[in-house]
Length: 99
Image 1 (cartoon, rainbow, N blue to C red):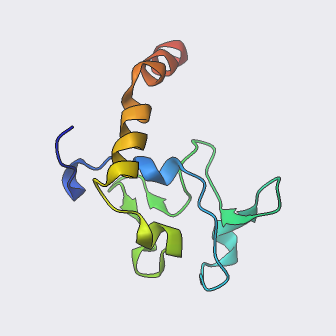
Image 2 (image 1 turned 60 degrees about the vertical axis):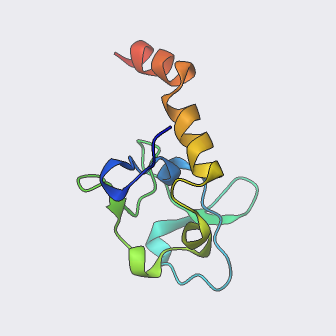
Image 3 (image 1 turned 90 degrees about the vertical axis):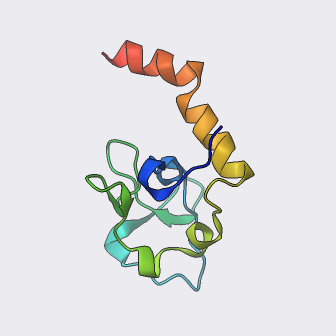
């Protein structure tokens, strides 16, 4: 897989569950609790984090984003794995069945 850059990122990590830490200062209207009781970022009906600017495909709260998002390394091993999973054969089948 080629290197990922801001212009080609696709923000796939913004579909992951983002568990908030006590030190995170995220506005409450952007958060919820998971069925397991974890304090997490809300996701929209489309499955994307509610802080994602879907037009620009970037974080709308980048300067105050959660700790876990700050630790996420663009083009690191985990990034590559979730991008592969998102664009793999199972994803193609999901897109075809939705059409």
